[in-house]
Amino acid sequence: TASVNKRTGYITTLVGIAAKKGWIDEAIRGDIRLTVPEGEDDREPYSDDDLKTIFGHPLFTERQAMPSASQLGVLPFWLPLISCLHGMISSEILQLGPDTIKCYPGTDILCFQVTTLGGRHVKTEQRRRWMPIRQELLAMGLGELVGQAKSNAWKTLWQPVEDKAGDTETISQQFSQFWGGFARNELKITDPQKVLYSLRHSFKDAIGPA
Image (cartoon, rainbow, N blue to C red; front, side, top):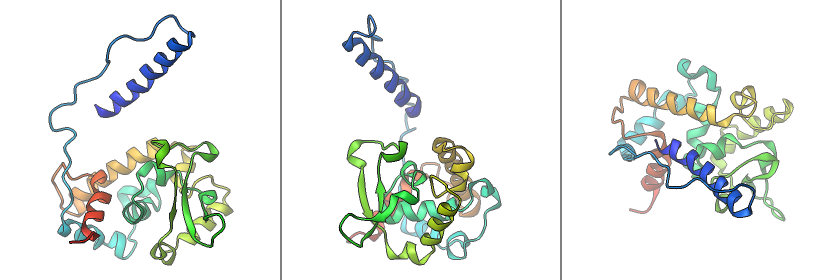
């Protein structure tokens, strides 16, 4: 429901701007929104024990391949790690490419650049930023991932996104579906209010000051 409302909001905003500019005779009248069912937006954080279960799974400790996510390539390993260690949302991670992994200007600090360059988009302008890359990711092989993308002339780091001609929304939906099944079936975390969106926030709270 929230996704439908967001897309409807885009349309009504564009039509409203067009009406103000005089490009059309009148805008759409009224607040066109679906009512969000009670509880649909509720999310529960993962507990510390949940986080230990998640990152103790062979997917992360041994990079075990997940047959249920074969269409997602290496994303089941990398997306949660980048999200937790850098606070990035899925749409930002899926748009990362070799050209967005670079040193901050005038320094030797290697960063992720969250940008609108190259046809990329961000949720809000305030989310454009440089984020120093943690050494843990480099030790896990981020450099090799970047090298593979460069050698294949990919715009992003992710073969599933390239295979879908840059359709990050479809890959994001596929990942969310994978994560739901992974949590229920592999991790036995069955609370439907504990979702992928909760992961980076729960991780941040877990490593924060007591």
